[in-house]
Image (cartoon, rainbow, N blue to C red; front, side, top):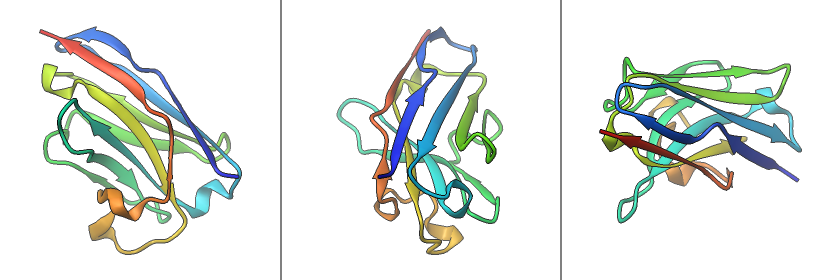
Length: 126
């Protein structure tokens, strides 16, 4: 049974940093594509950053240069380092996993991912 558990959310001021973690279990972690998504109230869930099973990363334009996705295969854990946070980054952040590749183009597409965590709240105040 695949389980994804996010942690590390919180409240920070604009310009601050947070690191999110996603602990994965129930599958061979390194063989899956992994992604971070976020959803703000009243908005669609959007892809933020993803890493495929070849280690290639993809970022949404809104977070390029500020967020970094990484993983520790030995710990089956995915990370999202978020720097220079802005109020518009406020959202619930979700970790997602999928065993299929499906192409680099679709890495930030929420429809690609089969498994989801429960989310962690990030609030950035101005």
